[in-house]
Length: 150
Image (cartoon, rainbow, N blue to C red; front, side, top):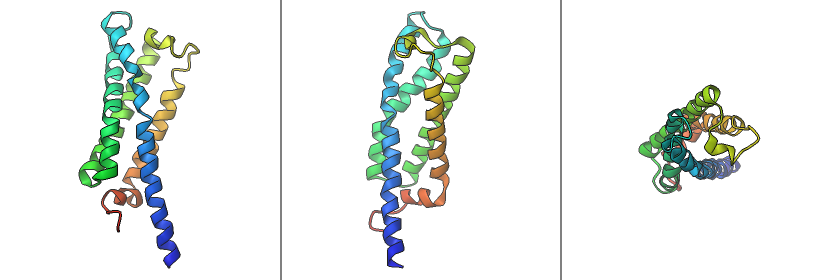
């Protein structure tokens, strides 16, 4: 019986650490800043503004969400985490649609000249969906409502 509680305690930080690492890995989405500039300059279609703004929102919110998950878990932080992943997934869907209609934006062709524009967002969406599912499972959701001493 004692072994089981030790194992369950070892899993608790692993999920939260993985979640925070994944959210931290969203910071490079600031790469959308040149896309916003490109759209503003008339180089790329205005349709790219929507996914670009959502990229910036997810990147800017990432450090604040990580801090909240680490310091202040609870219903509000859990809800904000679900909303964060919802925004991220909606952003990727918007990017897929825009990419399928217009092709890769000029602003990103310098970064990724090999036409792999779908691969990275597809992987990111899959991982976002995985975390979204895990956040709704009682086992992981409850980690937002327990203190470290529980």
